[in-house]
Image 1 (cartoon, rainbow, N blue to C red):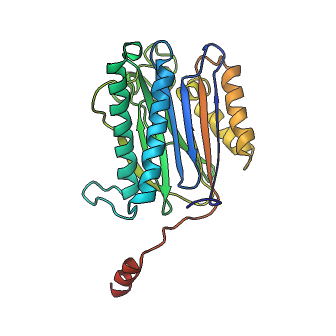
Image 2: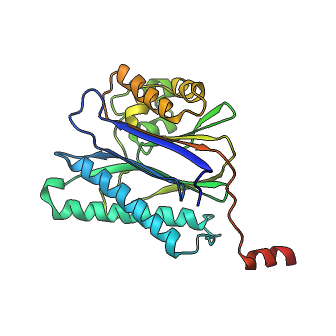
Image 3: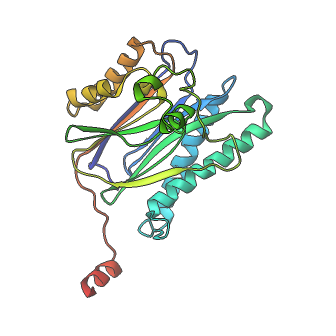
Length: 273
């Protein structure tokens, strides 16, 4: 359990133009799980899709912590057990959303992006589908960890747009991957070491489309460890710049290292080797 080693705060806002909020966030400090989903679809279908995604992922990962050995991994895939659990939970959420949309005509075509972090053993497993993002602030170095699954990102990768030009492109919000659109989904997942003092930001495109990375970095740096004030400031800045979409953020600070406890067998093997 990571209670006391990780500090977090999440906030979601409808924005200035939308009638209701289709974003959903989930936080579990005890197991170090943070999930953010940005839904899409007619009626309230986007809200249903993002809610199903977060509920399913949170439930399955928590269940895995309670009943499975989280210390095993897959060397061939270069993924830890937490990474595999997170990836499989997102894949399961995709199937549930897809099947729900097929069975209920009002929800036809609904989908959601998702970005999720799972912390364990001084590492983080990062999974995403779509254009919801993860950023990290480490020793005043600010980086975007995830790359959007979007048409504009593909065009940037091919040299058709610069980063500055992409901000004004008409196709900037067209995602190329989302949960619920097909029966299978390609979940992008990576794992990184974590340091004490790191600050992580998960956000929907309602934030990243409204304020640029320099402003996000300045805001994350300005208010030290006051996560609630930082989250409210980010949302306020997004609304001041137009608030064209729902805006959601989850902030996570690493307060102390959290190495995994080694089993007796692991300690013996380490001693023998």
